[in-house]
Length: 178
Image (cartoon, rainbow, N blue to C red):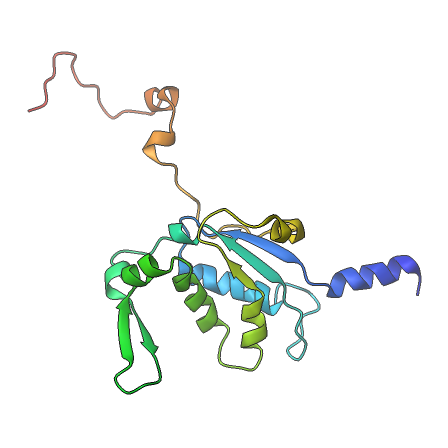
């Protein structure tokens, strides 16, 4: 085997580091995508018995978006192991306590209940904002494409874009709002 083929084989089986920006992303759809990278199903060499998964660094987990009233109606169960230790926490309360927990729990659930879940979850690195240590950022080589398009806020549009936006009608100059 030549040196070039050997290096190519090493690169095929090496673990890569992926960056995922969770800003304005649905945590449950994101959990499925992130779990695929942790399992290694995106690689052509994926096999059920081998662990070919990669590391995933998630930033901006405090800015996730849920549909409708999911913040109020979705609850998370936790049991301490002691009698009377069962608690149900609403999603918005859990997110206020720990902004990384909802995304962590969605990935944890997608990975299933098997012996490979713990080492795969060890390769998941979630940060509530964009401040990641330089040692981790040195390893990142790829970026996972966002699932949903991130909308622009009104304050991010310039005056020219607002003026050129098509209008259905023009108010008269002497029009007064009541």
